[in-house]
Image (tube, rainbow, N blue to C red):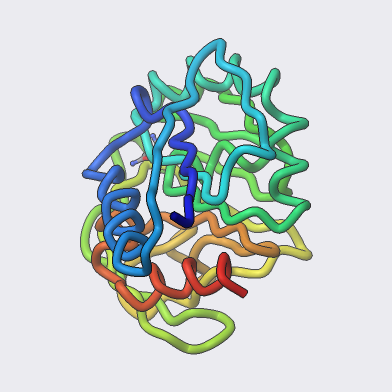
Length: 214
Ligand code: GLN
């Protein structure tokens, strides 16, 4: 039987607003295509072996959990970077997306260091302000529309050479100003869309599986 192995990065710590639903949706569609699917949580103190996985999922979290994860990420940085450069399928939502970039200043203005694999950086909004609600975006490559739910205090700015995942049609996205939402690089997508994204947008879920089957 064909096998797929999923890594849920820090799945016991970063998993807000039903983000695990992305793994459930992906698993469901993969099984329909005849795959046997196994998911492994890789968390604090575990080593991340990039050669083992077909799909890596890095979900959202509260500031506190992000502050714990930042310390552990240093040990996994090189392997995560190799996975991404080797065109591995990688989805990072909200807190996970923030942690792929340079840094995130949390709601209390504490600096949380990111992996610094990508150039985006995240600041906080004025006290108590968050972007919360439904969001709709247009895929920056193929024009598909995706629906999700956003809830973030952080506002993210992309580096000069970063391509957004989508353009905001409704909602706030990266920062509420420049209409960009998330980023994409090779087969990595970072985005603020909870939902869960792959459950609400079946076409995208199947596009991910198509990438693996190409
Ligand atoms: N704690 C981060 C923020 O508030 C990420 C939130 C999340 O992952 N839902 O911006």
